Length: 396
Image (spheres, rainbow, N blue to C red):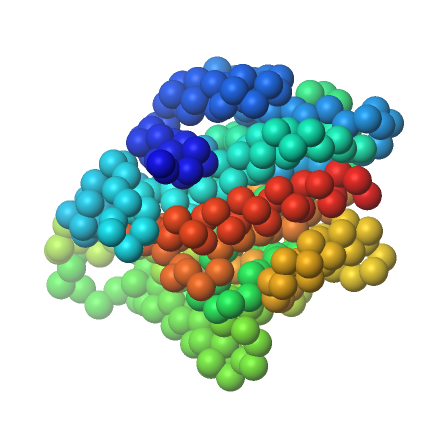
């Protein structure tokens, strides 16, 4: 007989809540059914096409701040031809691996959290603090219309959140990773403008020449960060978070081969290191633009502020509670900054201390990759981690 939580995970993965243009209707219906099965109230907030679904377990102390456990319902697109199985099937093979989009990011986390509530309820456990299990939309496209909007509402304020756990990342080692800060995302476009004319002419100060100056500067900066990462002594997952990543992701300009383009636009995906001084970086970008010549300007379609760091020491009672759980379960952990951007940043910015945790160790990191999978035993260990964490955190 398959474990109920595993069966629920596989059912959840069958719902193709994949970008672009996700329809969350099936996800909402599924989560509401699970909440009903566990005898817990479930409310849906936000807009109909951007729902925030929250199961609530009321604590005995109505004045104590609550605990929030968060995951997202959406998943990134797939290249089905690269998978051994249908990524929305999902198949469990003879070795016990469950394949499917969302097995790591983050449908597994949501099922672990809600299943942990169900198991504790069956044991008759009583909690001091209220626990909310939230399922949010659109994290994979920045979370602006999901958690980013929800934290600004009166509905969120009424939840009275004192501490939160959001997604993290699997680890290939025996340790689990807890993330207490993360990089800042920037979408940078550099507009290089110059004279237009016939392609046979050697015009001066063309957009292409200015583009070369800008591109060389950005790629030189990128190379310095690659070298810094290679020389780092930190654990693997921390190395990328400690540097600034720069990738050329867009290049636009020109109408046909024999016309010199009046404008070329370079687009860069930039993730500023947790150690990066934001103002210094912005000033560097301006300096690069000036060095390229006249009519070169920068545009930020995304420019995120530096996110506060959540304390991972004895000053944070929720950290102490977490460590008691991991010590009791004999699971080693390391605390590191997260290399990507998660919904936890929206929580930290409004003063809610938050950790990122995907309790999946000895597991290849396949976030956004082909053949995303989790072993059944690893998934169930993570469920037990969440059950113990809920009991500990809600009684702080």
